[in-house]
Image (cartoon, rainbow over all chains, first blue to last red; front, side):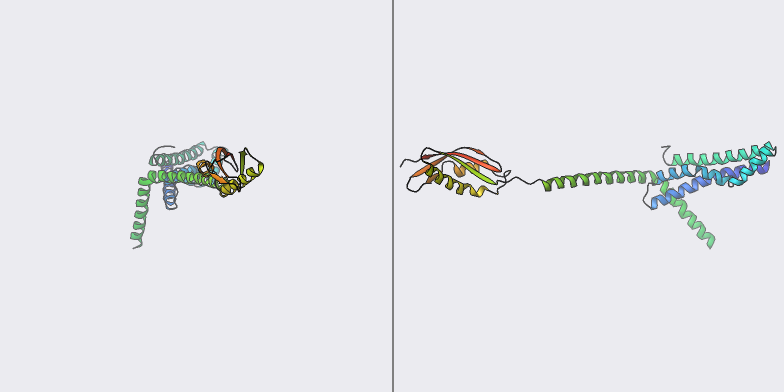
Length: 108
Length: 147
């Protein structure tokens, strides 16, 4: 259980970091090439949300395998754990996007 | 040493991101203003081009011909002579731009003028009316001047 909580925290913050880091660095790049930084930042944040989730849970194959084990192997706890991890990743990505929205002056 | 460089680089990145976020909204608004101005410049340029094309195709009309209608009581020979003289006088009007030509100039050119016809005395020209156009028509009456 402790390992799961650790993984869940890591997943949450990795997802948050992917969104925040990617978008903020992207915004910096946008400034350097003469594009609007805040608009670019929000665009990137929105596009990266799903990829942050995928990155945080460690790629697609492992998760699908765990789902398969959970459903076909009759281990609902593992299935629930994987689902919780995905939720944590989604939460981190969404929180990252909310932070970006506030930095850009509210949702557009 | 490399660690300090990494710190420095990270600091530069964090500082740049902070400044970028701080000034981001201003940069955004300036960017959109620039885009709007660029579009307006394009529209104005297109309008100017159209107007220039219109101006190039629009030529100012000029006088191409001057017709003199003259009423004279006496014979047609005198009328012909007077018409010839009036045509000579008003001949320089051909080629003048109608927009810039004052009709009073033609009036002063013709009205009240005395023309000597060989062996038939002098005639005074009274201008009746003018039609100013590419074919300008001058209508006048000639009366003999009593000596």
